Picture 1 (cartoon, chains in turn red, cyan):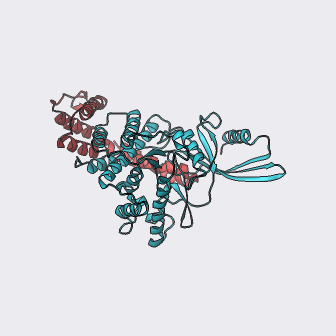
Picture 2 (tube, rainbow over the protein chains, first blue to last red):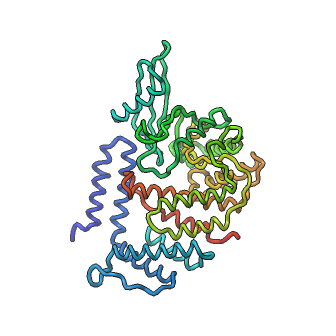
Picture 3 (cartoon, chains in turn orange, purple):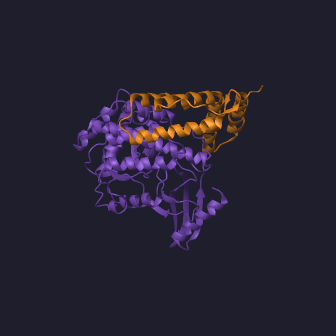
Length: 122
Length: 334
């Protein structure tokens, strides 16, 4: 549906940058507007990828932890439930954190996962 | 300043100056640039003993949500003890340690002339020629040496700062605790980095004052001269190599180096030549990793402040630093 969420977010960003910012003389407020603008720009481009990237990361985590892929809860048939997936993802990351803290030097596979994950989820 | 804050500041000052006549505070707007403190320059006027007085002052107050949660009392007491020492530290005037008078913990310092230019070595707003910039870079090393040469026992700093038995271990413990306290979610990457740091920490050596955040952005310049180093909130006793790791951290290259002219090796060599100390390059790698670990802790503190609604600054995560840390620790040292 138009305007898409991305277009609406971009529109809100333009209000900040093109309408509000030129009216502001306080450099502190200007700085905060620039951070807010950058965040809106990031969200506008990134939000459609959040759920697929989260699922990809869950599968990569399961592999590096050596556990079987879980069946993820669905919001509607065929669509993963975001909040449930985030909670499961958090559990897996906590488990990996515990393994790293209590185990020997982590394997190259753990490092590889962390590098890919950092790129994927940033 | 708002009238409420103005009244609080006047009351704070009056309680210290006593019943003087003509007390007047002329304030300017809060200045930007400090991520961890609110900065307010102001001029103070009063009449006393038949004379007019004027002091140029600077108020630094803890924000509601910061990137660093440090104790104003410690910073104040350190600076008070450094006032008569051969180091370019600012003069502190008054302290509100618990924020009972100014809303949040704050201290008032003498305001110095001079300008601040975060990226002066790369051009920054000053746009100086390369020889002048190299001269400033060299002065930054002298400034660090000045701090490391301080007789901290004579200055009484051990009354305020802990003396670590193992500075590297103390530094890991300190920043791991910040990460533990501030993280909103599990951090496997930081767990891996913490373990790397613990496996690769250098042996304890000489203990000196460590500033913890030496950079042009914390300096006031008078022309081309380094005049005073502000912002001592991370000062502690530790390994002098920690400051060297901070300024040679590849991520902060743009602040501390001049490509092809003054890079990490030139900086370390200048430090070695002028101090007679030998800088262990393996230990330097540890301190550079620690520098980024500390930066991640600072970002996490900012993220938490944002997510808790205590700051209006919208924070992104620390993804870039995570990648750098993985690259820096890719091969084990031992």
